[in-house]
Amino acid sequence: MSTKNIDWSNLGFSYVKTDYRYVSNYKNGAWDDGALITDDMVKISECACVLQYSQSCFEGLKAYRTEDGRVVTFRPDLNAERMMDSAKRLEMPQFPKERFIDAIDQVVKANIDYVPPYGSGATLYIRPYMFGSDAIIGVKPANEYQFRAFVTPVGPYFKGGAKPVVVRIPDFDRAAPHGTGNIKAGLNYAMSLHPIMEAHREGFNENMYLDPATRTKVEETGGANIIFVTKDNEIVTPLSDSILPSVTRRSIMYIAEHYLGLKATQRVVYFDEVKDFAECGLCGTAAVISPVGKINDHGKEICFPSGMEKMGPVIQKLYDTLTGIQMGRIEAPEGWIHEIR
Image (tube, rainbow, N blue to C red; front, side, top):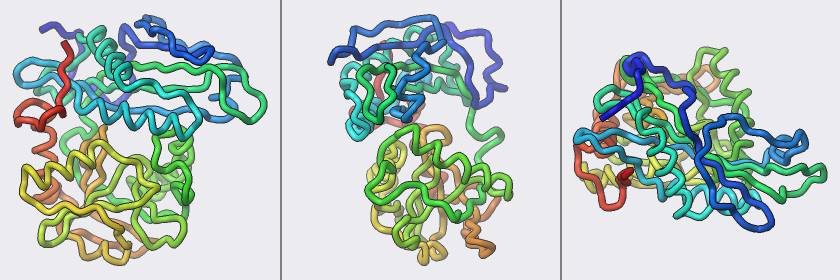
């Protein structure tokens, strides 16, 4: 096993340029064959559709070095399918699922020495994305597109362990009813930047958004799905057409039922009932699960019994089981682990 000369234990969660990235261009109604390139600069027109009208979508997943030395990705087929859904909603050509997985395999294999060693706490983050690349001045979809995928080694999202965070209920909405909240569009994240910076300036870690129509139902944060644990250990996640279908959240729900023997339910969660839950967590690719210790609703606090010192016992079991599957310590359900050969 060969790896780059990197201080893996002190690696942060930030961009590190690697040797290769994958690029494929769409023109005249078809995708080209795609290729690995070394140039990390993107060259497009000043009038490119992505710069004028934000026609872009992206994905995020990781490659891991397992206990037995294999390099694997986790459920890349779901990322491929979600990106196809995002592209369809944004009037972009879909990058085929098989080609998406092949592109990920190619870019990870080409940068295999950047995959951190097992046990280091670091992983190889993979960022596939697509954007309208040709000059468009009228408000309409682009005619040409570029699909790219790069990788970067990242350290653990939480240095020294995942401490419970404090989130607030903001006065902003994350997504409009029947809008784009259920796809991974860049524009959704641009909309969340001001609210998250405002939250940070006020001393909070994240925003917990309520539904924009009635502001009575829990949806998600700016970048993660939400999970709750009831006092009788049922896993509950909010149901809404505006929530991004998180790969991590879907995996957690399966693990809860089939590995831990817990009841797992996706349903409408009213904010009024949040005070009655025993645990809360934010789940996504980067952090897996970030425990929530407290919610601030315009000065009124909801404090979870799990406290502010560590993960609650059920969320800890979910975290340990999911990361154990990803790292090869626990046998995975069929099709969840994709080996890079």
